[in-house]
Amino acid sequence: LFKKIQAMLPAEAMAFLKEVENNLYVRERPYKHYRKTLASLFDALNRAIADHRAMYITYFTMSRGEDTRRRIDPYSMWYFDGSFYVIGYCHSRKDIRVFAVDRIKAFRVSAETFQRPEKFSGGEFMKTSFGVFQGKPTRVRIRFSAAVAGYVREKKWHESQALTDNPDGSVDLEMEVAGIREIKLWILGWGAQAEVLFPEALRKEIRAEIKAMKSRYQ
Image 1 (cartoon, one colour):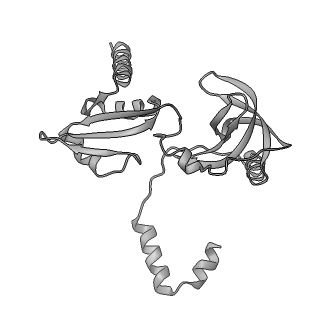
Image 2 (image 1 turned 135 degrees about the vertical axis):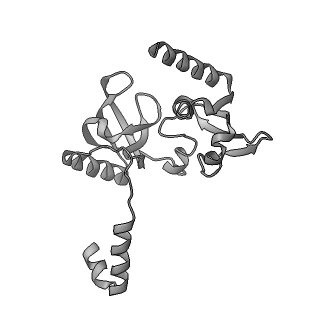
Image 3 (image 1 turned 120 degrees about the horizontal axis):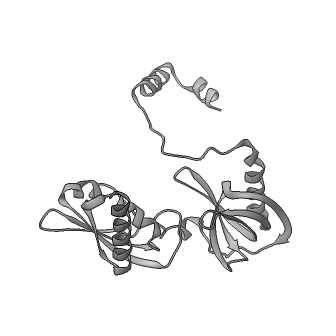
């Protein structure tokens, strides 16, 4: 397909693209190497989603370090930060869950069908998540020092974000996210330049993490 596109472009366009190729460098973020053996799984997932077929899977749960067997009704695929996920209803948990495709160790597409919620949208479902994980909707407010305020202002970090500038040059970032697990790690990445103003539960988790880090570096 790319060769056909190239054949249709005038010489000056090809020269420009060659120049861009020589002058532009894009660094890849960390990503997963998907084995060729996963091709059949991707094919099965796409067919199951299109045909509304249930799937029986053996899934490796990272947090518990064990394989679990469950039936899922796959609603849609989702790609984020170098990884593929399937969003679907888990009959074991009686809830919609997100599964990393590469952690599905075995699978079988069933003849059983399901009815996907009429207004379900994978994009909308993941909208409140700060990354991948889901959780209770939580309002958070983080104060960033004047030293990094400019970096915070220049990006959109979340759909719900609101920025408030302070007289000392610092900036407050407020947003509603799905749980605090992922945003805690993100906040820690800013070091002493960020302070959680609320909720108190998140402040406590940050304090506990800092205490554990201090102990490790004694």
